[in-house]
Each structure stands twice: as C-alpha cells, then as structure tokens.
Length: 140
Image 1 (cartoon, rainbow, N blue to C red):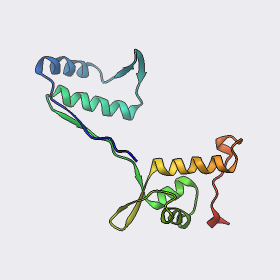
Image 2 (image 1 turned 90 degrees about the vertical axis):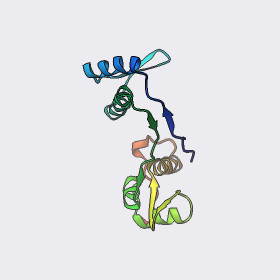
Image 3 (image 1 turned 120 degrees about the vertical axis):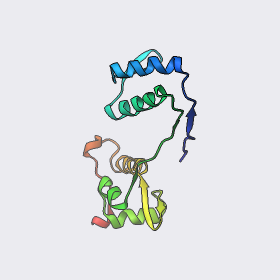
C-alpha cells in the first residue's frame, strides 16, 4: 500500500487571494477542468475543494493529506457479507491486510472491497457482479 506524501502550498499573495475570495463569496459552485474537460464534483469532493480554496483566499498556507477509511472487523465482515470469525481468520492468515490500533484490528475499506471482487471473480467469472456471492466456509 503506497501512501501519498502530504503536499503543502504557500499562502496566496493578496492580489490573488482577493479575487478568489470574491468568487467564492458569489458562488460555491466549483467546476474542475482536466485536459480541457469540465467535471462537476460530487458534493463531498466539492465541499473539500471549496474549503481548500477558502483557506487559500484567507491567506492561509495549506497542507493536503489523504486518510484511508478504516473499518472495524464487524464493519468489514458486514461489508463483505461474511461472518466476523471468518474475517478474523482471513486477517490471521494474511489474506486480508490488517492494521492494529492498540489491540483492535482495523481494515482498509479498499482492501476488503478488492478481496470481495476477487472472490466474486473466482466463484463465477461469467456472472454479472450483482448475482455473485462470496464464499464463507464459516456459514456452512
């Protein structure tokens, strides 16, 4: 798992911060352009971008970092549709990566989703994704 290093940006000079602040005051609708193509952001992403721009417009330096969503074993088991004890066996065997917070196991949502996709492909590669079920030997 590769973690991205945090990225920092210096405060904007007043001649750039002022127009940005005025634009954000008039509208919080943000459109992002990637290679000349406009992309409307989902509400959560838009809120994060507007917050970042507001901080820059206030003359603040910013630092951006990402945080992986960590699940408890109960949440991960529910997401995967398997028993809690089977999930613990998968973490003990190293099949699913686990992080410890004290004595508590935490799993990245992305790891659980990837394991689930691999199980679905393994059980019936020709079936549509919604029709496939993961294997849970503990449920037998």
